[in-house]
Length: 208
Length: 208
Image 1: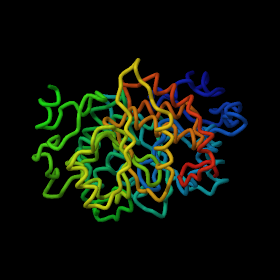
Image 2 (image 1 turned 60 degrees about the vertical axis):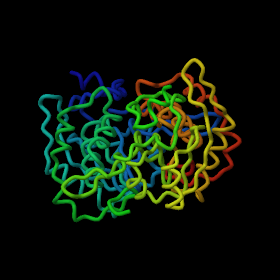
Image 3 (image 1 turned 180 degrees about the horizontal axis):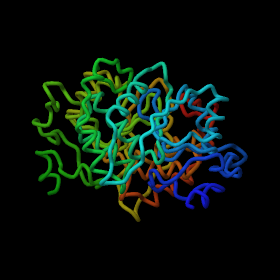
Image 4 (image 1 turned 90 degrees about the vertical axis):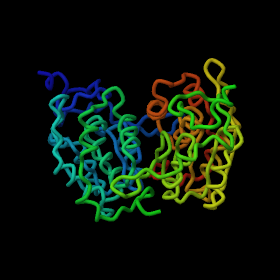
């Protein structure tokens, strides 16, 4: 019912975190949203919700929609890493195909506390994709860009040997009022030892 | 009096925004803070408060202290752009000197609403430094990394032609509960036309 009501328009709650409630489908994006924003005749870019640069060649965001495509083109992405389990929307698939962008999908169910169960193996596999410079420039995204994306980035920061306070502070900047203790516990307990041998190509890497 | 009470220890309110209240001086940093954080015998990095990557070669943060120096070394900075008017602390000057980092200081008085008066010319001069790739990698910082830094980055985003909603959203991620309408008004009204001719070397630039 919820899906029926939503599928002919852009959901108004993209800012809200409602992991697992929205099914992405063909009709998810309203055609009127496709046009670029303009100011003084010049096109304005609309970065996806919660967009930010994680490190050289790695970006993070919420679920991109049609309005974000012209901005995403400026990033010259080689890959997109999607952490949602739902089928990738056709409009997004078209965008990836026409820009030669590879999709990696590591579906993690959206969940609310206290029923959050983040699969460590999936996060580990996702991190391997993130660490492989052959996949850069790469965009990591889930739905809101807060929890699943926040956990992947947080584990990456541990690999970069950030102290936990800074890892959590960054996580909280995106999760804000939706900060989850369970996510923070996951990041704290995440064992980086099996990934420690992989090279880090980042600006903030282990070796000065 | 406030200064006297503070100058022999690390202020406990670095997380709080109290622009203009703290005078930076020689004894600002407690020597015990100098040692790196450690975990399992390995050094952990402590990024400065509100640290983030703005774009290729440009970083932002709150005021760095001794605990952050080993992390900052990993960034291989060529310049630091400080937006505070107070004399730069001796420990920080030593760090810059010994790492061959150039200091640009554009002092803007910290102020609280409704008495915020952001000098447009100063922000414009600061932006010229940020846009010059010869200064990269560059760290922009003020005290908390929220307001003055937020305004410079926001104006940079306008140059990158981000829509205002995204500019504000990013600003608010850092300013959080300290978000200022006056800063947002400043960014909205800031005239980018005199800077529009300067090349943008960024990942998210005007030309795809």
